[in-house]
Amino acid sequence: MISKKQHPILTSEDLAPVPPSQRTWGIWNYAALWISMSLCIPTYMLASSLIEGGMNWWQAVLTVFLGNVIVLIPMLLNGHAGAKYGIPFPVLARASFGVKGANVPAILRAIVACGWFGIQTWIGGFALFQMLRIWFPSLDTLPAIFPVSWALETGPAIAFILFWGVNMYVVNKGLESIKRLLVFKAFLLPLAAIALLYWAIKTGDGLGPILSQPSKFNSPVDFWAYFFPALTGMVGFWATISLNIPDFTRYAKSQRAHTIGQAIGLAPSMTLFAFIGVVVTSATTIIYGSTIWDPVKLVATFDNQFMVSISMMVIVASTLATNIAANIVSPANDFANISPSKISFKKGGYITGVIGILIMPWKLIADPSGYIFTWLIAYSGLLGPIGGIMIVDYYFIRKKELIVNELYLYDGMYHYNSGVNRVALFAFIIGILPNIPGFLAAVHAISSDSFPTWMIHVYNYSWFVGFLVSGIIYRIGMTSSKSIKK
Image (cartoon, rainbow, N blue to C red; front, side, top):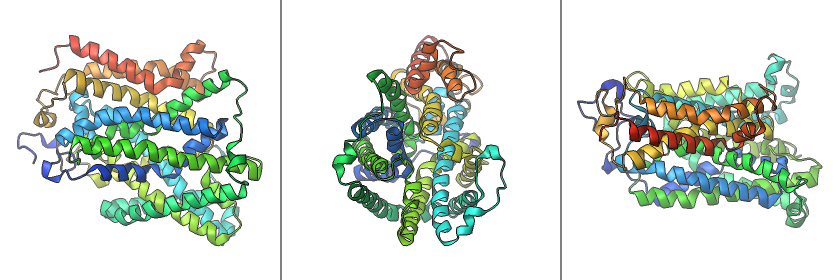
């Protein structure tokens, strides 16, 4: 229950602590959550993009596995506060960034989630387009209405907007309407993946030729030059939820429930689904003579119209379920944190939907290079510093002790200076600075020789660099600062 002393601007039903009586999630709830979220098209594309980038099957699978084991660590660490106090991510961030300063990590994390919402919506919309074009071939020949620089064809754009509208309808109706789709996805998407695996093995003359596809790297130096940014991208894939995992662990029966549930649900399911993506993508090289890393485009090449239609329907439905569960819940809470009394969960969902269009998601996943080096690594360089600051604050500064009621007060112990912890903001800025030259080079805003080579290459480790630099600077700053009240 929300205390009467809590400021109404900092409080809402969505952001209030979950009482112990309502914390009912057990081990298998968290395992099922991760299995459900892992079995999605971007996971498949994650692994298949590594094949397209030059890795062989075991290099790709191992990279995915290592990335998920690494990101599991901050996920479990951040999840502790949610399970102990029943608070969501935006409220937990107030302890380190201040009651007003917490809007900075909340908004940054929300914008990244908007990007993922846009990507998932584009995938679902493109699958819808592939299904419709079978029965309405004229969709392929619609006149171009968008600027050439947008790289957006009319037919896919129409399907994208239609699918976006379905997502917004679900937001309007409430999350209860997605439960049946989650069940639908839990059964049908794994079956569809297994069917695709069977097709790849049969058509590619067995696993032998598929798994014998060699690495495309000419030397160990070339491999390591690709491996480290790829590993950072794998960590970046779940870097968003490694921050806002308290949004889910606040419902945990115990620390043990979410710890074991996440451990058995995340890495194994991601690795298994990644293996399927790797095998199928490797098979396309044998079958078609070129690598097809996008499963929607792959299924669209099949001759059987009925099979293509059913496959696309499965992709559309499962993508809708994943999108709402993974990419609406958290950013809606983050936007609500800006002004809890004015922005409801539903309004936060609408904001997410609009930004998801504005980021032009079709460009983010146009090719594997952009998917990993521009999208995954870039935003991991923003979220790594936030994770470092929050974990250092909770474990080293607070010793896992928070005064929950104070998190909802403007004039409480987490007020700092006008509601902002300047030490946290300074540490955050210092943490992202080393990655800026490499990012600018990656998006071709500058030439790669504008800075020393080592400064450009730091970007390949952006999440790790940001996490460590910001965490260390924050620990030093807070240890010597008088702003923290113990």
